[in-house]
Amino acid sequence: MDFFIYYFSVFLSLLFISKLFLSYHGNLPPSPLSLPIIGHLHLLKNPLHQTLANLSLRYGPVLLLRFGSRPVLVVSSPSAAEECFTKNDIIFANRPSFLVLKRLNYNSTTLGTTPYGPHWRNLRRITTVEIFSTTRILMSSAVRSEVIRSLALQLFRDSNQSFRKIELRSTLKELTFNLMMQMIAGKRYYGENVVDLEEGKQFRDVIKEGFSLIGTPNLGDFLPVLRWVDLKGLEKKSLRLLKKRDPFLQGLVDERRKKRGFGCCSTEEEGETEKTIIDVMLSLQESEPEYCTDEIIKGVILAMLAAGTDTSALTMEWVVSLLLNHPNALHKAKVEIDIHVGQGRLIDESDLTKLPYLHCVINETFRLHPVGPLLLPHESSEECTVGGFDVPRGTILMVNMWAIHRDPKLWVEPMSFKPERFEGLEGAKEGFKFMPFGHGRRSCPGANLAMRVMGLALGTLIQCFEWERVGEEKVDMSEGKGITMPKAEPLEAMYRPRQIMINSLSQL
Image 1 (cartoon, rainbow, N blue to C red):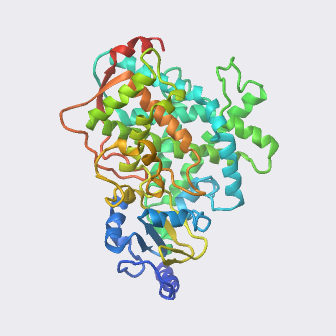
Image 2: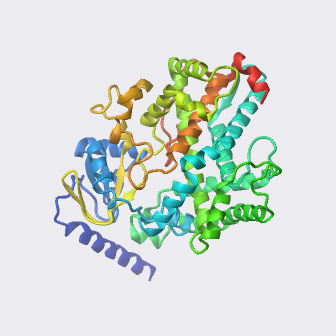
Image 3: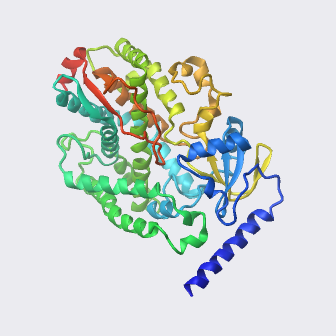
C-alpha cells in the first residue's frame, strides 16, 4: 500500500509539472536542459550564489530554472532587478511558502515571511513607525552605546594592555544578540551583571537551532511527494523547537507586561531609561487588542532577532578581515576617527555622520561579501515580463546580488577592496547595482538601525584598539556555507588597547 501511494504521488507530481511547464507557450527566459521530476536541482552546488552566477554567465542575466515543481527566476543584472522592484514590485511582493519557515514563524505571519496583503501592510506600518522610525531609533541610542562600550571595557580588561588573540565571530555575535535583547526586552545574556545565565544559554541555543533548521535544504518544498516522507524529519524538528522556543518568547512578553502593571517599565529606579520594543508593542496592544496579539508581538521579536543578529555580526567580521588584509584602509579609518571624534572620548552615534570613510568601508564590504548574496526570495502573484521574457505566476524570484556586485561591466576592478569607490556623488548613484538591504516594498525596514549598530561598533573597535593579523599570512577570505554567508573560518586576530585611549577606557 505504501509503495502504491508513493508511486501514485510521483505520477501526480509529473502531471502537475507537465501542466505547469509543457503547456505554457509564452516567451520564457532561457533555461538549461532539465531532468524529469527534479528539474535543475541536480545542477545546484554550494555556495548556491556562485553556482547561479556561473549559470547566468552561460545563459544570460534573466534565467529560468525549475527546482522540482517550482519555477525559479534568477536575475543577475541591475536593469532586470530594477524591473522586478519597480514596474513589477507589487507582483513580486509575495514570499514563497517553505515548510520550516512557515512552522517557525507562526504560520508565516511574521514581517519577513507573511504574504503581501493587509496583514503585511499592518506589520510594516507598525515596525516602520513604532520601531524603525528615526525618532524611535534616536531614543534607543543610549542602549546601543552602553552595550558596545561594555564590550570595549571587557576587551580592555582582558588584554592587560598587551596584544591578545581573540576569536571575533563569537564576540560579535554575543554583541549583536545582547544589543538586540536589550532593545527588545531590556535584558542581556552576555557580559557582566547578567542575572539569568542559564536562561540566556538555553534561549541562545534555541535561537541558534532555529537558524540551523531554516538553513537546512528541504526537498519537500520543491518535490511534493517528499512531503509525505519528511526525509530529514524537518517538520517534527520544527514543531519540537517551536514548543521549546515559545515559552521563552512568551516569558519575555509576560515579564514586560508585569513590569508595566507595576508602573516601572521605564524608570530610573529600574535602571531602564528607555521603553523596550516589547513595551511599545504592549502599548499598541492596549489600543488594538484584536490585532496586536501576543503572537504578533512574539513574531516581531523573532523578526528582530533574525534580521539584526547574525547578519550584522557576520558583516562586521568581514569588515575587520578586509581591514586586516588592507592596513592602509584601517589606518585611514582610524585617522578619520581621530580627527573628527578626537582621543579624549569614545565615539558616539552622533559622530557617524562625520565619518564618511568608515561608511564607505562598510559599503565596500557589503559589495564584496554580502551576507544576503541572493537577497530574500520573492514570488510572483501573477504573470509578468522581465527583460522581455514572460514570467509565469507563482515563480520564485532570486536576485543574485553577489553576481551583480562582482560584474566587471559594472565595477572597476570588482575583485579589489576599494572603499573609495563609494565616496562622494559617485557612491550615491549606485542604484540597482548595489542593494545590500533589498529594494521596493519588501526591502529591509531596519537598514538605518543596522548601519548605526555596525558603524558604532566598528568605530569603537577601531578607535580603542590596535589590530593585527595573527601571523604574516593574510586572512583567509573563503566563503563558508549558510544562508547568511559566513567566512569559511572564524576570524582570529590580535588586539591591544591604543595607548592614547587607555585613559578613556579606564573611565568606563
